[in-house]
Amino acid sequence: MKIKNIVILGLSAGLFFLSGCRDSNEQLEEQKTAPTTLSKSEPSNLPPPPPGIREEFAQDGIDIDKIRVNYFSDGQQVDVIADLEDKYPVASLVKNPVDQSALITVRTFSSEEKYLQYGDQNGLKFRETKAFNEIIQKYAEANGLVQVAEAGEQLPDSYYAFEKHQYQAFFGAFSPGWLRVYDDIIPYGSNKYVMSPFTPTLGFWFFDNWNNKIGCYKRQHIYMVEHLYDKKFFRKHLVSLSGWGGSTVMFWGILGYVNNRVESMILF
Image 1 (cartoon, helix red, strand yellow):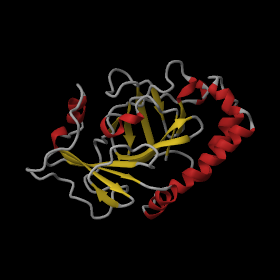
Image 2: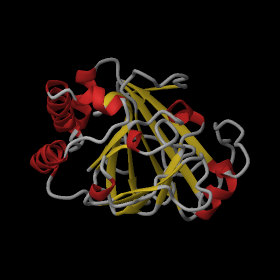
Image 3: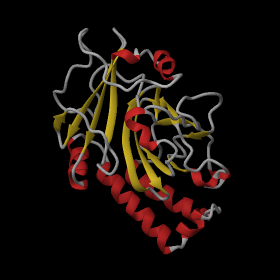
Image 4: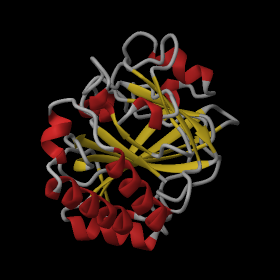
């Protein structure tokens, strides 16, 4: 993406634990799931955290030892889903500020249609996102832009004008917030890139040494859904995430497979 068309914002990578979420169940939560607080006898089922993860959660008001992960496959609760990739994964977190506990809900689907139906049922725009992606991909292929992007070259202004027009047609004029992007799973130092209400789509391949090197991001918004992709032009869906307020998304643990793979992204 041409730098003149970009408002610099920072994405930070690490765990996918959305700290700073609202207290009640958010839009992506299954109906009538387990309570958001952990019983004193119920241990966390997270893997041992690497250095810095515990402290990052603490900054967002979450005790990592009080985080519990619930898994759903096609709406049915299961013990664990070891591999989320290629299963249309959707994930979200709800925290309880009273005792600093948190509940992460991870869901997968056996088909794209079930994933889309889930979005329909919960007022999300998964189906609109699919239509947007397909239009962008067809345009890129018809105009030889896939090869241009793969070579790390600048795309023409006409592409960005087309993408902006399509985004506004499907999602409105602006996204509801900002993201600050980082190259480690902990948001150390200054952010490396910024996504804003004016730049709600993202392709990292235009920046030297940044393609496939995103480890976490910080949110600054009221509520937003993010779709992350392994390939340019919103191809090969990795995961759909949601969050409220100031929160941190780190590609570690259950989202470790996303680390250093994001090539494109869309917010709404």
